[in-house]
Structure formats: structure tokens, C-alpha cells
Image (cartoon, rainbow over the protein chains, first blue to last red):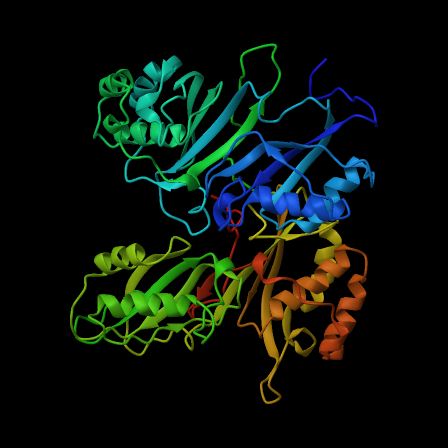
Length: 274
Length: 274
């Protein structure tokens, strides 16, 4: 049975939230002193629903300011009282939250479940607009000045797939952390004028996807060859890779907790499509 | 020859801007003392490009705070110097403006052209979301709690088409102004879970479309019958009609200047679709 569908009963449970948000207005997921954050807003709303008791919400990942999410996961231990039925909790939260943060589901999970530490993989999609600018997609895509050459970008991405030391693609890493991660897949899909690059991996370092997309963009724009991407990876040196790309094109699509197989994810439509 | 394609030469010309904007962050089109407005931002950008000379930009309509535009039209008389080629002007403006305000075209028009007074019609679309909420369309649609019954809504809209006194559907009208307007067409289209109501008319009073949509929504939700809409129109009394609906579902789609025929407009896709 899946870890996410076990109902351990009424007396000993943790609650899981599946959250979609437009990160444009926020200082990211994680609570900070000087910014409105998604964690902060949802914790405050939960606390009000639980009669002012403090709630500690733990997210599957720290997402940066401006980054969006389709399937962010967070968990918390509800107080013993008041008891709030799950469907009422979802509705009450959505009534209290701004429209750009939506609770998609509330589920019971075992008390020992951790949205953060039990995650075995994640899928992220980065959206590049290679056509005309519109005022309605600027918060959700990075504007490129080239026509995408998918063959060349796939060739450049190939050496990144697998288990590697990604030191060349990480920002502000602490010296003690390992930069070894496994990327299971990098997919390129066109939806009209929008190129979506989807990364599925066992985990990603700070700003790693934005560094990788910056590098693939340099290939598309002709500033790097596919062969040079492999060389940059092998150098394990951040100064070798191009600039990171902006946060507003990035979407956390899905967090994986099932341990039965390698995480797979297929993007069906533009992450922000209505 | 069309009024919009005459080039009167270099010495005596006015410039027309075709503008798309996401109105969410702004206090509407028209300059106000306490709000960031679209007119204010574009005028400032133009003034900087014309060496600090003041520019007076006149818009085709006053759009309210939160209302969006796909094809807003404005005009201004450029200073004699510096001369800026039209393609350069467009690029330079877009570089200086925020991403949610985009200049789609810059064209030369006769010096006597007025974006405001020469407009012979306008098309507006209002978007209602009758499905699941997403954090990415909340700025662009009004969330409804019913499934749209297009037959009933078309029946309710029928008596509104034509030339009528729309006093029942106007907010804050000055007593001297006539409330007589002509609506050429009201179209209902579904794009997935989004119902688009498109109004084409010779002009619309302050908040008139939002009053009309509020009324049609009341029909869809079962609070009014189609027959009651006709009665409300005939009463010419604002207190008879339901509340106006919120601004963020409304898009100015097109302004008409050609005098050869009745304005027609066919919505091809959701106004904010990527």
C-alpha cells in the first residue's frame, strides 16, 4: 500500500497539504523576517483555524522567491482539538488564503511521514517563451531571443542525465554538502511558442535547475556547444557555467514519495495554462 | 483608405500605440495622484525617450483598476525632435516598461486623429471560471459556483442587444449624460472551464459591462429569470440590477475606428491564454 493512502486512524495522524501557488508576489516558500512567504501565510491561516494554536508546517523543498508550484507538498501535526474534517479544512484554508495560493488536497498520512525527508524525487519544469511577448505570461516564462533547436538542446542535456557531481551548477553551496545528485530525465516539449524543459531527479541543489537551464539556453543561443556542457560538468567548478536564469519561469510540478520505482513525470500542458 | 493606414508624411503626424496590459497591479489607465497607472508609466517612458519633453497620451477609454487590455489604443503628438523611427520607438518603450505592459504596435495616424473621440465601437470580453480554481488564472477570471447554462444566458442577454437606455446598468453617472448606447452583439463561448462573454457596442458607460455580467451571472446562478432582465432594463433604475462583478475578469479586446460597417469581433481564444 502506498505511504500516501494509509489512514492511521483518528488518534495518531499527520496531515499532508498539496499546494499550488503563483510565486510571483512572494519571497519564496520559507518564512523570512522581511518578506511575505507562502509557508507564513498558510501557517497563519492554519493557526487561526486551530483556535490560535501555533502550527509548524514543513515543506517538501525550499522554493525561491518568484518560483511557482503546481504540486508542492507540506505536512503538519494538527492539534488534538478542534477536530476539523479534511474537506472543511481545505475549503476553510482556501477561503482564508489569497487566490494565488490554492490548497488542492488535504490528506491523512502516518504520523512519522515527512514531506521533506521522505521525498525520493522531484519534477521541475522551466518555461521559455521563444515567441511574442504577452503581458499575461511574463510572470510565468523567460523570454528568449532564439528559435529553439530541440536536437541541439537534447544533445547538450544528454551528459547531464545520470549520477554526477553537479558542483558546476550550484550556487552558495556549503563546503560540507555533497553535490552528487541523480537526474533521471530531461525532457524538451514545445507548446506553441513555449519551450518546456522538465527535469526529474532524486533531488536538486540550490538554484541547480536555474543554472542548468542557463547553460542549455547558452547552447540554444549559440554561445556554447553541446560538447562544452559536458566539459563544464566535469570541471565541477561553478565559475565555468553561464549565469542562472530568472526564477519566474520555474515550476515545481511534483514531489515523489513512492519507493517502488524510478520517478517518472510527463508534462501534459503548460504549467500555467488555464 | 482606412484612417489607420494613412501616412501623412514626416512633418505633420500623430502616433498611435496599440497596447496590451495586465491591469492587476495598476490603478487603471488614467493618471491619478495616489496610484501607479498605465497612462502614467507609458507617458514617463515616452518623455524619457523624447529628451525629457512632456508627452500627453490620450487613451481610447478609461479602464478601471484591475481591468486588462489586449488591444487598448492611445495616441500622442511626438515632439519635433528627436525623430525616433517607429520600430525603434516600440522596442525602446518595451525595454523601459514592466513586462505586464507591452506595446504591440506603433503606427502613424493623421494629426487630427483621436484615439478617444474617433472610436466608433469597442469589444470587451468578461471571463468566468466555472471549474477548479488555479493560482495562475485568478487574476484573469471570476470564480463562479455554477455550471453555465448557455441557452438560459443567451435568452437573458437577447433583450439587451440593440439601442437602449442602460441607466439600470451604470454606476456613478452624471445626471446630464445620456445612458443610451447600442450593443451590436453579446456572444457566449466556452473554452474548457472558462465562459467568455463578449460584448460589442458603440460605447459602454462606466462599469456598464460589469453590471451586465453581474446580471447575467444572477440568471446563471438562478437568482433572476431571463424575463426579469428585460424588466430591469426597462426600469432604467440602477438599484434594480444586481451587484457589479469584479474588474479582474474583464478585458478590452479591440477598439474600432473604421466607419464602413458595424463593428464585429470574434474571440478566438481565452484573452489571457499563453
